[in-house]
Length: 183
Image (tube, rainbow, N blue to C red; front, side, top):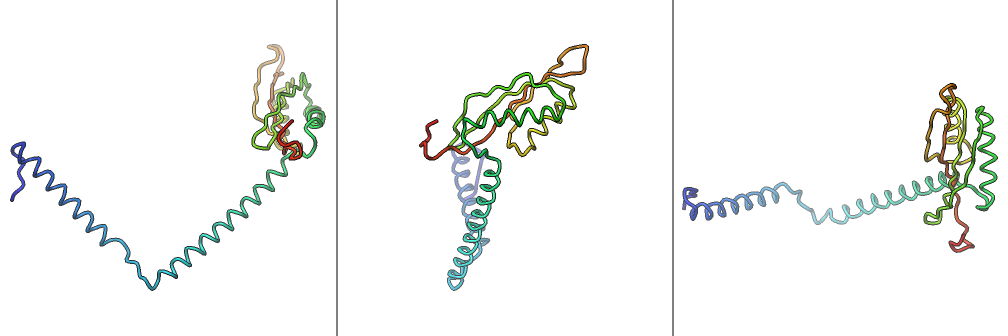
């Protein structure tokens, strides 16, 4: 039988035969290119794979311990009601060190995120642009453990080089397990 695509009856049958042949050839090539499994090496291969998986699990556990230690070092270790006043004092010290005037310091609603409390604050400062940038960097890198999540600036007055900046910061705190998730 020859393959013919001249009329519609012969072309559909020829197409099916051609596709079948391509599939068969593909399966044979696939089977020939796959590595052959040696039954004698089966246990050794499984042992090797098991030891590799065990090593990967140990590496993952070490990574989790390291990351947990890193996160724990950035948490506030005091009751939630004490974080606000202490945070305000630390922000005030950083603002004074950077020659800025604090216009406002506003706490926001505490957010529970799977046992981790996010205690947000909004700080509004006034001063020259380089000092505001230095203050923002100081907030991010200070041992006070703040995360800066928002910075907005605007010109304070057209006649001065001062800017007014609103900076959102977050203090993170592990929730008390004794309160069972209640604040």
